[in-house]
Length: 240
Image 1 (cartoon, helix red, strand yellow):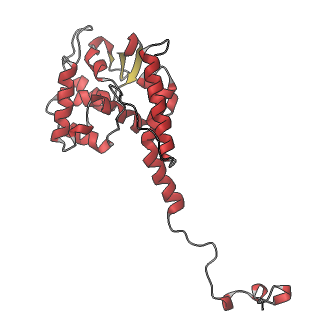
Image 2: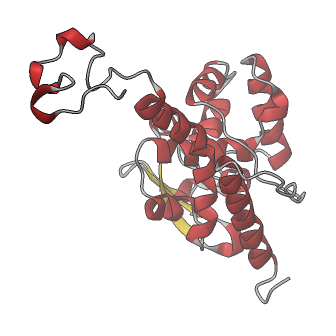
Image 3: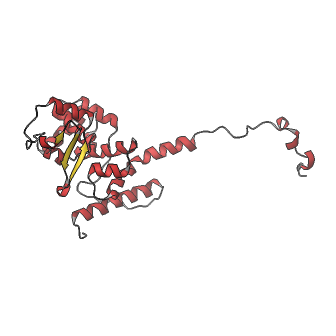
């Protein structure tokens, strides 16, 4: 473990995941398996999955939980710690206290703004979502189950991964995404790029692997002009 303890370990882990999966995408074989780690990086859902989960919400808090994580990139524990004093509905923003006590400002999604406007506001130091981490975890799993999504693929942090991946797909720059996620090192943010590998491959195959019209149609020999017929004005004739 380096001088920065857990932060250094986390950075090295995510950077190694990024490099290993990039090499795998290039076709390099024989790579060692990724080391196990508590809270190991996992994949993202499609945005359609997120919409279906929201449609299965049983109350406003279900909607708010999914929106804060999938539309604004909050961690589950940041949702737990969010107070009414952190919310600025006029600007559509929220102040979030993340890891190591670092504060950042995130933009609230449309669903979160609508839900927060519908809820009775509390005191500035009153929590917005009065649930434990475990209760949020259980709600997310329950929504996934009702949406017909494999529950083994879904947990709160996967919704944060989904936000990051969807943001990159929609053209957000890495520095902006880094700021919204609260990463101290942009190399941690870069780990989300590997989730776009299939997008890259799909774009490449659409551009280069589809059947193309040949540049010069294969006309029969008699269809070519005389100046490209064998033997015309010095053009090489048949070899005997």
